[in-house]
Amino acid sequence: MRKALRWLLSLVLVIGTVATAGAATAADRSADHQTATDIKDRILAIPGMSLIQEKPYEGYRYFVLNYTQPVDHRHPSKGTFQQRITLLHKDTSRPTVFFTGGYNVSTNPSRSEPTRIVDGNQVSMEYRFFTPSRPQPADWSKLDIWQAASDQHRIFSALKKIYPKKWLSTGGSKGGMTATYFERFYPRDMDGVVAYVAPNDVVNNEDSAYDRFFERVGTKECRDKLNAVQREALIRREPLEKTYREWADANGATFHTVGSLDKAYEAVVLDFVWAFWQYSLLADCDSIPAATVSDQEIYDTIDAISGFSAYTDQGLETYTPYYYQAGTELGSPDIKLPHLGKLSRYGYQPPRNFVPRDIPMTFKPGEMPDVDNWVRHHANQMLFVYGQNDPWGAEPFRLGHGARDSYVYVAPGGNHGSNVAGLSPEQSAKATARILDWAGVAPAAVRKDEAKAKPLAAFDAKLDQRKLEREPALRP
Image 1: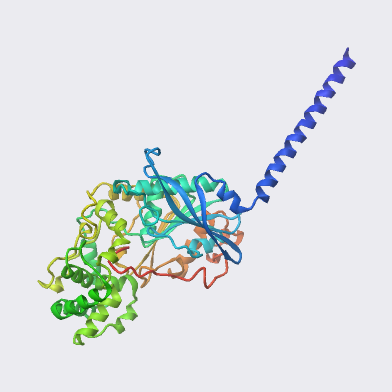
Image 2: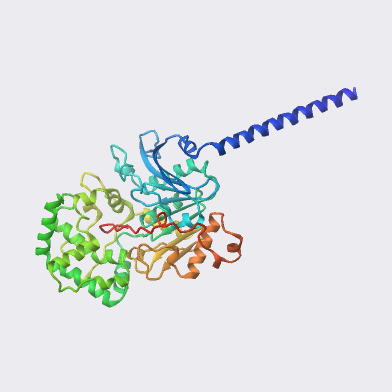
């Protein structure tokens, strides 16, 4: 009897061993299959994902994709739209950076600064309602920061299964705002946030910070020079508007949305000083002419800095989603410009003037205070980078009690293109080290000494070319 029991136990052990070995072999085969499957096939196996184009780039795979999103994430059954995203694929064993520009997405391969720092993959998202990522028909009430964050959450959730390593989110200007809002609504998704030059207009009707900024930025000599040209453009309004009209007629430009050529002209002129500091450096003040130059030189100077195409119907059309958000949630700056006296007829015009009247708009004053309060008290592994001379940094995000492993740095003399590399050497090394650590790829030497931190990927002249896009109007 004992022999029989021993024989039976041995048989069970043999069968169990064989079964275990078989299961392990099956698991190995499954893992091998996942590894062997082409990355494009794995991406396109995601429900709702489709390929627009694959573009070759040495060392990477680059895909332009469409992803099916609900128009309303609270009611997914009520319609969908195609959202355009791009994917710069390096390796599934590397961390991934989620880049948001806040506007249209570029369909050419490029690398954000954090992507180069961590030598990772990059997913880039086109913001909802920027064409072609716009539902048809467009229900503009579904364009808000929570819906956009939910777009990002769904993309992340779908791709995390393929890219299982650490994820960081990043973006500049409105893209930095987008990365911050995403973190506020989905704080468990990302392992770190790098937000560049992100405005934080907490109370829309309180803009004195901007007035103080323009009283102190740069040097008095430069401020006076810019103010004089801006003032002269309004003094010479009649002849310069004649030149503007001739340009508009020659180019088929119209002014139905803003209301008149006169309103558009003044809006461009009022943008002039702001746009200079947004995109230029103090040294560029040498290129600004004296206010005594010819009409044409004044016109050309204003056009080069703030762009007379900005407030035409054609110039505004692409940016309708931004102005809608500025007038419903984000807020917009309004500064006093005392040097203009009574020359200004309209002052800084509200976003409502730049959105077609058939699109309803109601401002929600509680959205920005909510985000600001969350960042102050709950930020975790967040880095904010600003430029000292960038007007949009006049109202920055700040950290308060409860924030953990988070930082706000300012690039000396920097404009709206400020980045980690432009910080002081000590802060740049610290920021780089934190980004590497958050991504889980900090070398041992950096973990011991943050001063040794540097990007893991070599500079690529095409991928890493800094592109400070000059928006032809007052936009972040």
